[in-house]
Amino acid sequence: MANPADSATSRAPAAGATEKPSDSYVQSFARGLSVIRAFNASHPAQTLTEIAQASGLTRAGARRILLTLVGLGYVQNDGRLFRLTPKILDLGFAYLTSMPFWNLAEPIMEALSQSVHESCSISVLDGTDIVYVLRVPARKIMTINLSIGSRLPAYCSSMGRVLMSGLDQTELDRVLRASERRARTQRTVTDIDELKVLIAEIRTRGWALNDQELEEGLVSLAAPIRNRAGQVIAALNISGQANRTSAQEMLDRFLPPLLEAADKISAMVGLRT
Image 1 (cartoon, rainbow, N blue to C red):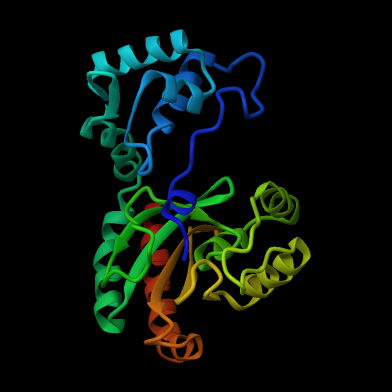
Image 2: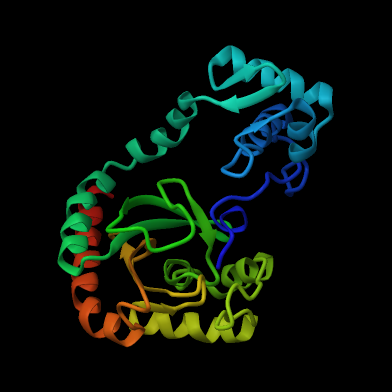
């Protein structure tokens, strides 16, 4: 089974781990974000030393940033431990409210979930991961607790492959090579060339089927959401349990309503963009 600590969340990268422009890069801001990213489901409350280590900062640097975040209300300090406050949700909410068509998509997702009696989600691509922006859960089907903002690897998820099918070959190659491609189950495809073939097929047919590559027992079906120009900007999926609905049954029963829902959302996006 997948480990939530390895899947939906991960430790924050060091502050200087990514390539950055020499002129416009604000290092102090980047360090502040690295401190925020140090918190996750596996590490909700941490000491100063732990946060400094996770964010790649000195204790003094991490302390200044933490005290700033405490002063702004984004972090609270309880003795030796620091933890995020609910105010941090304002940052993610700003993204969702800046794209109001997602609110219009939710009723379509709810109708889809009710018709197939399975969970339904929308995600976008962020680096090598997918990030959930909307989710209508039917029941708990994964060992990973998923909610808005959760992240999963793109290379082995149905929505991730749909999203990567919208990339040009140069960007697709970059994303795949940057991905930590490990066999999460016995079925997981990790070879870059094989993944490129699978993604090319998805690009041609317009949907992706994932049969227990992300997690044992999990099957999922995904379709693209496109903007007015036809570009893939998000992915919509249905997830189910293999012991209840096989991959072939999901394809036969759920693909038509999934494609219809994705087309409806794409039409709404076209009116807003």
